[in-house]
Image (cartoon, rainbow, N blue to C red):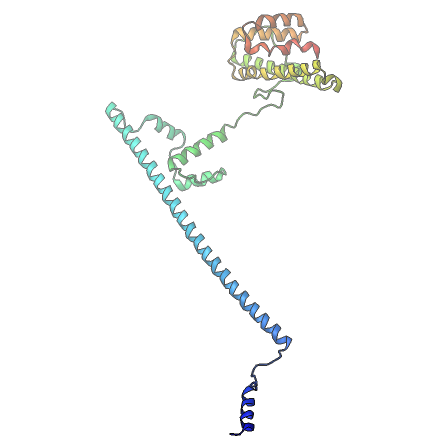
Length: 305
């Protein structure tokens, strides 16, 4: 081989082969490839999120089912335990009554059931509770307990609590107008007469307290802020608070004669504006009578109103 052919062969080896790849790409192709890659990544992430959400939902459902079964088992065990205790108590009571030679069922329970209309069917009892706006069932409540709750609600609805007055000291006593507040010269001996006199006393004390509060409220602000002004207001508040036990005694009608007579005498003198005599009665009664000591300060201060 001559030199020319050798050099031609080596030069042909050194030349690069033409590449099949494109040297240049369109911008639209690059953008399309980027969008396709982004969409594929988002689809993968979405699938993973859905798988995690489905897994979490299954776990929550399983946990809720376990909690329901656990609560149901706890409720069933509680009912069984309560029923077992009631059965044991009833058995002990029967044995005790048998040992004493008594009947199996106490007469008091029979009378209570007869007075309350006897036992009720559970469905009827639930309907009656719903009519009263009460829950039909309470957790852990047996039929006997449900029946007791219904009877208690019926008793409350048939005997509503007494309405309280809106005075300085709320009371269940029906207050009288001012024209009927004058107490009698002699304390009545009959229960109705005493009850009416208690209403007179409560009405008078309420009237004087209201007038006392109004008189203190109508003072100038400069007077209210002085030491004497604050002391007068505190005396009124203290007298009002210490009168609450006396109002309770009026409501219950259990105030003793040794206290009632001097109180009536003091009120009678105050109503006749004989404040010196009322003050003398106050000083006599207050010795050893701590629970009415500050109460009767109200009577002593009526001449300031």
